[in-house]
Length: 509
Ligand SMILES: Cc1cc2nc3c(=O)[nH]c(=O)nc-3n(C[C@H](O)[C@H](O)[C@H](O)COP(=O)(O)OP(=O)(O)OC[C@H]3O[C@@H](n4cnc5c(N)ncnc54)[C@H](O)[C@@H]3O)c2cc1C
Image 1 (cartoon, protein in one colour):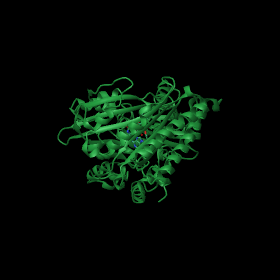
Image 2 (cartoon, rainbow, N blue to C red):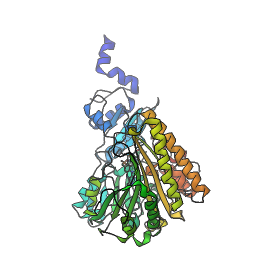
Image 3 (cartoon, helix red, strand yellow):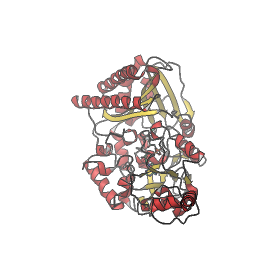
Image 4 (tube, rainbow, N blue to C red):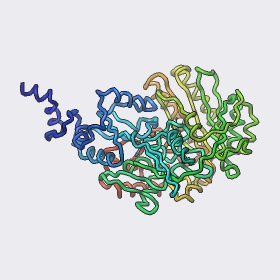
């Protein structure tokens, strides 16, 4: 009877779980880290699996890979509550096998933003986007989506250099670098960050900028999730000009000609610094049986028919698409790749040559053929992206204070190649598609080496979990990141208790 009473009151569970008496008024959960959060006063900020909004929040992750089920989800309302969550979770009994995940926008497709065995810190409430005219800084919360950031900043007639897909989140995007429409004049998204507010593992909230904790400021620019939880990014703002913007669909028979134009565009980037070009190959048999080429052609100053695109524009569209004048907010809101599928991804860079582009196009066609045979043509969609990476991007980053990506060391103009495949069936097919993709990426890498066209960068934001983006930054940057991680997190708690994503402690020096 006494035991029954204890069980029904939940007291017995908490005694077992945390080994101390439970003094919160909220019923204990039986999960030590969730109970530690409740005891720290964060009971109202926790979502438990028994609540309907828990399932909604899990379903709001972009890819199925990420829709895992933590013991509980804590949703702090401000930096102070992030610090309290950090202290409570790191102070909880760590016996057993559980860990901590961090989520900002939830767009990472490899599952590094959620966890089954543990607790997820969900930064959704840290979603502000404010502007200070005096400093020309926009203060942006990690949990915001780029389309909302742009819409809020547009009220002040400014923009920041963020994501192109409106549904992508701020937090992960900027920690990985951030490839944007503004690369030709502004470098990576992270190059615009003048100050980071970050919660360290010792529970303190610090700023990192060129005067205060400047080593941490530099390390955070492309150094990934290795130092603490970033709670605010203060970014240099730009005037909110309208973009000239065109999305095109082109017959696959023109692929090699377009690739050749892409190479010329990249080699001449310094003449068209306000232009941005993204080229992609896609196969979606539910729409059309053959593959197609797509381009995104943008001029960030609203110039229609920029001469940078003159040659490309001579190639006919499947359905003519005019240039439009749109704000960045409109472009981002209108460009949201639908989620809810299993994702495979891989990325690398190679020299900007027509031969390597042609090889990559042929590999896409072979990949489609192999995957059709294995899982059926209706069950997947490919999207293989090519983005210009001229050395001038590295020069811009360097002038703005530098970053960790190591692209300033690159001597040749490169192409950023990213393979993405959506799998509509199941996890088993996903693993099969990922193994084919890994093999293709390895073949493309060794082919590029064989023709003297290999380059180092593995871009963090597009990397598969088996790749080593931090290692691709070069030995000096790897050692720098290790030193900074050690200085701000001497007990390596962020490396061990927050194990998801690319951790600098796993990279060889
Ligand atoms: C459709 C699509 C379009 C994309 N477009 C672009 C693009 O144009 N340019 C580009 O560069 N990338 C792009 N990406 C990649 C995107 O930048 C990454 O997936 C990025 O991680 C997403 O940011 P998020 O805030 O949504 O991250 P989340 O998925 O929430 O987190 C990503 C990682 O960062 C960690 N993290 C997140 N926030 C914090 C924080 N505040 N402190 C510490 N660690 C944190 C997480 O734990 C996780 O490991 C795209 C991805 C997709 C699927």
